[in-house]
Image (cartoon, rainbow, N blue to C red; front, side):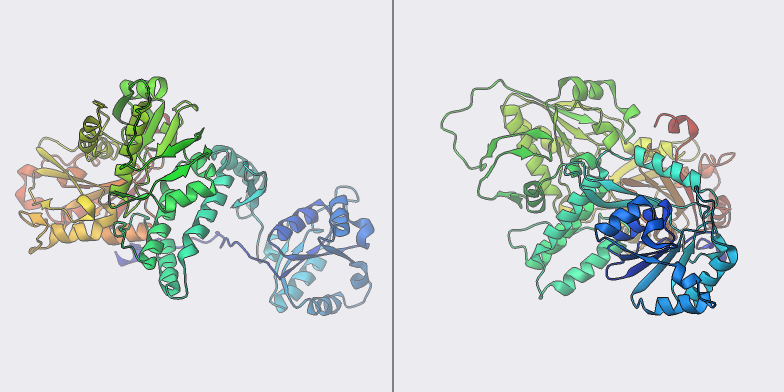
Length: 616
């Protein structure tokens, strides 16, 4: 069993690296169009480029000659090296004159279309041997056994807003088994991504740099540790303290960096791509702190987070309007978007989103495929419910809703799942009512039931589970919650708990836990974590209470949103079925679960069944 705890390495793969070649030299042997392609890639990596061309500049392709005249690279005649008797010794001596040489790319081992010339295998082998003896990485085109590295089919995205190249690049390799197929897959990946994903990457990079502006010599060690935690964390949902007016520089830095991670994870790509510096500053330092409104600010011009032109004055909530604006009274809808897949929207929700809404206030977890259904002229706000800011963001969204409705807008508050199932809809109903608006609440398909269903888990099943309990994994203001005690006939669904899995397991398993009302749970009880339920990249991890934390850590990066399902119903529909758990007291133990898991500590299921996958 120990041999199956971690994936076994399978040969045939590549260690794909992204090289920084600043102040390093790339040597390209050959002067054809492939050499020009290699040269351009090296130049974008800020490498110095030298081209060894048989015959020198005259034999080089037009692009290489142009780049030489632009002083982007240099071209050296390679014939001088071939004319000596000992080519290998002369080539090695030449390499010794290049102290910063990092990579060698041989391109004239590919047959030239015009002259039909091609470097012989023996000559290519001599170059390879010299580079190997000098510990210099080399790639020889079309001779895979003489390659220390390969160059994947790559693409660098542009920032459509500025027209400049963005930091985002993708690369794909077939490890020499289908170069043309790799190029085709690259095109298909590019076409499947949002149009301005390059711009989104550039804006997030800018936000990350602005978030670091609080870094000082005193808190630099804290930032370095935080940066390490952010990059290594399995989820960006790690709780942070609620923002306070007494926030220290270190706490401010922690919050800002965590918010950057949250936006990377949840915000729609096109909304990220439209961020301006003013939007970034507003997102990093919201006006609302612990329910106290900071002094009023004037915000005018293009508000790119909402995608519309706005020339507004945002008043303090304590401001006094002498003359009330003369507008038609607006309306407020609280609607549920279901677990994620747009086909699970109710007809009523689809109607208000596409035909009635003029302003949409969306939770951050509502997927882009649902937001894409909203007409382009409708203003969209994305909730800034990042760890440590959930309450502030909730207050801010309700304030925006009241202001918009007071202007006569039709406000749609869009929530994932069902608004009344841990969606804070009750708070919003009372808030809007206190400001003169009676919201219309439209139910949605709750993920608490739909999520397990998509994972093949019935939340109730005769002979297995005759009751269902739904609870949250986090209490108000981030406090711990009380978990109901164990009952064999009950299915327990925990929403918003994956990021707090270890503390939840302590509450479930410990005999002395103060956060549980009732009996402790058996260590062998089945548990499932369902991530991104109903979406094409849905993932289900099934294990036991004692093994689930380690299994999740081994599985790697989490896929929010996720939920937890605990109970014997997790096994109910496996294979031929396990629907007599309530009738067989003696067989409910580790062996039952391990048999279902085929002797492993966990099992993982990727994707959806075909019928639902076709709806994507």
